[in-house]
Image (cartoon, rainbow, N blue to C red; front, side):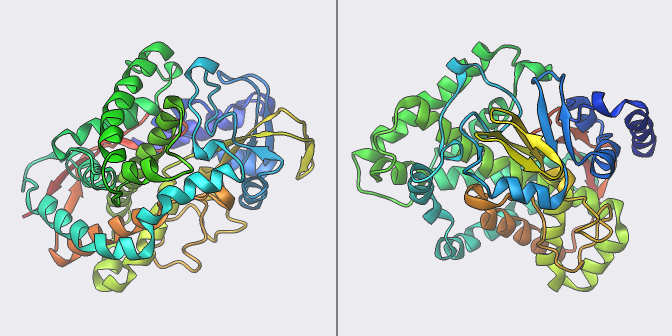
Amino acid sequence: MKTLLAERGRENACVIPLSDLDVSETKRFQDDSIWPCFERLRREDPVHYCQDSPYGPYWSITKYHDIIAVDTNHRVFSSEQGVTIVDLPEEHRTPSFIKMGPPKHGEQRNTVSPIVAPATLTELEGLIRCRVKTILDGLPRNDTFNWVDKVSIELTTQMLATLFDFPFEDRRLLTYWSDVAITTPQMGHEIDSWDKRSAILSECLDYFARLWRERINAEPRVDLISMMAHSPATRNMEPREFLGNLILLIVGGSDTTRNSISGGLLFMNQNPSELRKLRDNPMLVSSAVSEIIRYQTPIAHMRRDAVADIMIGDKQIRQGDKVVMWYISGNRDDEVIENANSFVIDRKNVRQHLSFGFGIHRCVGRHLAELQLKILWEEMLNGRLDVKVVGEPERVASNFVHGYSALPVQIVA
């Protein structure tokens, strides 16, 4: 099935006039037929202008070095209008530190970054390992189940609840709010209007506002709510800004890791020689984690808006233009990454990927994401857990979060 879809995708990408090619179509991400489109853009038009799309006109930046050039130039390329290709209506926009420039960006980012500092991660490692063992031990044997729900979501949502010191029994609300936050009416989801989306996220804000009131009247603690409540940079946030930072932390703390957990298992099943390589040499776990994150690219794109005229490659980008950095394409740029379309866990320069971004907006939780994946694979190897994918994955209809809603598997006891 996957091969057939890929061939159809390749045929469609080749027959569409270059000027009409719109790589933002969510269907291509859902059926995994997007790759030939990006291959064509990297080859024929790496800085590509799409005049007509559901999201308005935009530039696609598809090659590795061009993406870094945009990502590290925050003076010309602003995130203030948002970091996704979608133009949210003004009344539904929420400020957050990823949408800010210096100095406010740094002040707010530095408020929360200590929770994923090396010393804190060292303290969390034992807790993560204990939870991973409990989750793996509780999985059904010789029966089909959804790896996304039982493992990927459960592990990352438990971790997110710990970071927020969120009521553990309600932790799945975090998953729900994350899914709603990345959903737009264009996606054909049950969230079919901006008002419905905002109403659900208002429930998120109300819940966290109660936690905020508790934490601001208590001694400072090492959790995200307490840290924001007691920091001069964040304690006076307006409700919409608080909500914006909550969404940023929830999505960033769950989607990246959970979709890499799902993708990693899928890739190991699709490439059994790489799984054998890992089993024969467990010291490759850290390298394998980096390759999983590159190959999955859990955040497909980031958007910027030009605040001045600038040349990228041989193209003139004008002030006010929307510019989309397709990390998912840059991670397959074979002029930089050798044999980029192959999954190779011991490749040279394995950390040379774009999945966490570059510059001032580089993912603040990247080391925590890597740690969770590393521990999961170490415990799977230690337990000699043989997990087989037994059906086609179901992918999310999104051009932003590159992920899965289901991955049917069986554990061979």
